[in-house]
Length: 200
Ligand code: ADP
Ligand code: 5GP
Image (tube, rainbow, N blue to C red):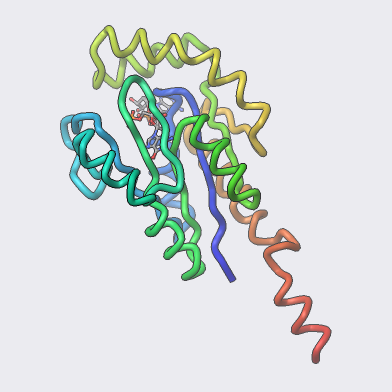
C-alpha cells in the first residue's frame, strides 16, 4: 500500500516548521521531503537536512533532466520538490510531507489528485506579523515582502482539503495528526483489504 502524500502550505511565519516538529513528537513515521532551493542557507540550516542549496545553474540542470515533481518561484527565489525521493518513499508505504507554497501545492494536486492539501493559517494577521518579526531570521525588507503576499495566499486556502488554524501549537499538531490518521482510513487506500476479504 502506498503512503499518503501530504502537502502543507501557509504564509511564512504561520508556524509550519514549528507545528511539523511538534507533530513528529506525537506521530511517528512521517518523512519530510527535502526541497531544492536557490536561496542562501539561514543560520543553523544544514545542507541535505533543511534543503539542498543549489545555484541557479544547478537548478536549471535539474529542470532540464525533469527531476522535479513541482517547482515555484517564492519570494524571488526558486524552490522545487525532487520527484525521485518522494516516489521512492511513497512506494515503500511511507507518508511523505511536502511543505511547499500554494502554487506548488495546487500543481501537485493537479498531477496527484490523491494528495491531501492542508492549509496552516495563523489566527490573525497581527499574530503572523509578530511571529515573523519574533523569529528574527529575515530582514525588514523580506518581512514586508512575505507579509504582502499573505492575503493572496489565504485566498487560496479554499482550494485546500483542510484548514488548520495554528493558534496553539499542540492543538494544531493534533489536528494534523487526525487528518493523517483519517487519510489511512479512506476507502481508496484500503481496496486491497476489501479484495482480500471477498476472496476468503
Ligand atoms: P513557518 O515555518 O510557517 O515560516 P515557523 O515555524 O518558523 O513558521 O514559526 C514562525 C515563528 O512563530 C517562530 O518563531 C515560532 O516559534 C513562532 N510560532 C509558531 N507557532 C506558534 C504559535 N502557535 N504560537 C506562538 N508562536 C508560534
Ligand atoms: P523558506 O525560504 O522560508 O524556507 O520557504 C519559503 C516558502 O517556500 C515557504 O512557503 C515554503 O513552503 C516554500 N517552499 C519550500 N520548499 C518548496 C518547494 O520545494 N516547492 C515549492 N513550491 N515551495 C517550497
